[in-house]
Image (cartoon, rainbow, N blue to C red):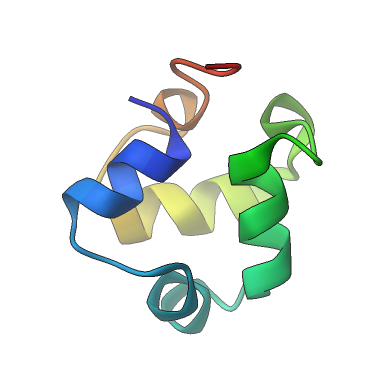
Length: 66
């Protein structure tokens, strides 16, 4: 699973995840659509997302690109 799949599996919208992590929704969207390379996200963002989604940071990149 990648970022989008993990988010959806937790029943979260991009907006809800953005509020929970403090990461702008536009940045989350960019990671999910490939406009930003998820492999190059900051460590801070990777840790925030992995905590919010209950996964390891490396799981955020699984399946990317689709």
